[in-house]
Image (cartoon, rainbow, N blue to C red; front, side, top):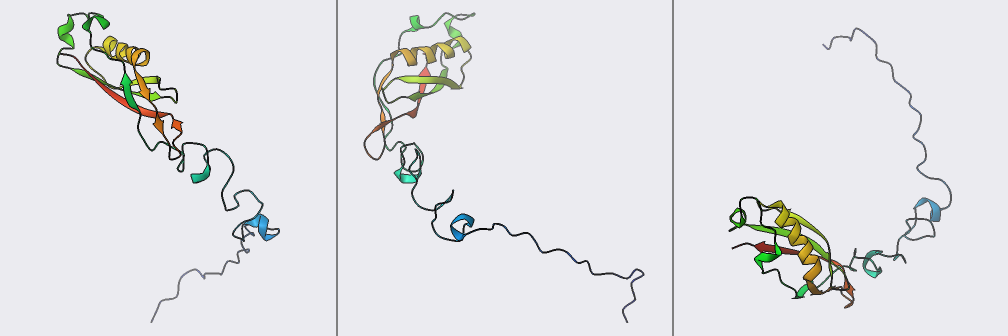
Amino acid sequence: MVPTPPVALSRLTLPDPPVSADGPETRSGAVATGDGTGAGGTGSGTGSGSAGQGQGGGGGAVTRPEKIAGNINDARDYPIPPGGREVRRGHYVVVHMIVGVDGRARQCRVVEASPDPAADRRTCQLAEDRFRFRPARNAAGEPVAAAFGWRQDWF
């Protein structure tokens, strides 16, 4: 035999949940496409899926930037750090930059630092000043901005 609980349980009566949306179907999301915001189909703004102009959804780079000119190969390009050039000898720095549609490097930043922070900063300056690229291209063959990485070694 099951014991009787000491307190009688009462049933709670809860109101029905509110309607998620009201109005005609084209406004409340009950049809495949409509004229309301968020309606299905292809948009007309930049980056609107594969038909857009932006880098998202098929508008981005298909090819990578290709470095076609510019070098960093002279020790005289770098200041002599405290302790001499031996501080960075045998080390490297890795930088990332954005290559614009004009083939120029911009927004360079250090992603793997060397023991010489001044040389790391100088590498970014030199890359932006000297490097030239054949820009990345999208599926339509148009030039687009894309990321590019560079490793500078010191011997």
